[in-house]
Length: 148
Image (tube, helix red, strand yellow):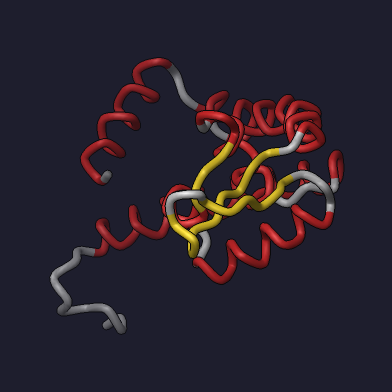
């Protein structure tokens, strides 16, 4: 008898759940290691820079940015502090809300993101996409869409 028996999940369901967790952790660790090694850029920093680069005027309110990345609000504040010290991001006051702040991607942030992006995309290709065929990718997309 396992600790989780009787909770309404089959052994197969638990196996699938654990496989999903392990795959995500393995891929994330690989991407993190490659970005750190090649660009001294943690994966969370890359994600923040990417979110800002894709935003209009390369800026997002801190609350909106926190909703787009997988960090707590306090974790995002600390990360933005580091990115600002490195000259990759600036903070700007929000004219319409005295308490609101924008995170704004700097030109140096754009350059750093451009340098790191080939490493990031190569990692996605080698650690995830190369293991799947076109039909697998479509099934994966459909399954994930149900979860999101």
